[in-house]
Image (cartoon, rainbow, N blue to C red; front, side):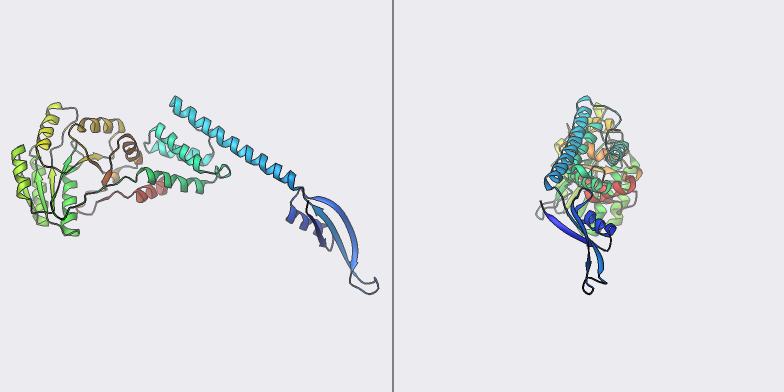
Length: 358
């Protein structure tokens, strides 16, 4: 037990010093008044002295009790999350602290699957100290780290200095494959100063061929139009002196087995290094799942997401990464060529989400 002395001009001042140093639970052992200074006991200044201490054992017990209560709160939250996970409830999260309720609402609003939202919440609560559950800033910081980690598997086109990289874009109709391939071509040609060749097998749409022809003339790239697998292979062989060969394919409905078989025959016969499935971020997640499962028979190496400027649907990216073990690559956020395409930056995506939603 540590004993301390506190002095003041009056009892109020002395007690203020005691509470400031030892807290409200200080134990007063003794008080006295005396005069300080003066001459022969006269004219001295009146002083009040308080001798006080604090029971460290009691203080430790209070701290331990508080820590126990906080740990119990954390356990209750984990039990609640376990219940959500096991029953897959679309339930109220009212038992959670306000900061976690807000995060949950925003994740679900942005299309994150409920099971995944629960998993993200669990990761946050595991990282948070119990006393920080109500700290919105701290919670937001841990959320950002968790989301960035989940989007970290990013792999754009990497060129080989010795042989050309042959890349095909596949996907359903209406997702913007032709515009995306034009953006990629312009970026590699104009910004990275690479020798680019274009091949289009999208002969079902005259507009698609004309669009690529216009872009190829603007950036000074070669363009071949092919109708059959053998023509595709001849065109690839013709461009072996290029740095990169980009192949545009016709949009195919995943529900049309004949179209999918034709695309499979075309792609399977060619010497293609990487196949990028192009998906629109505005598509419903159940439809995205259906598209990916059907295009997997053709082969998918990486994902490109278009139209991110038309939605705040961060959930699509998180759900796809969670569901399929394949990297993300590029995102597009407008119609401008070549500006509106970039390698997906997890930090930028998450920062935008937090800025707009939280």
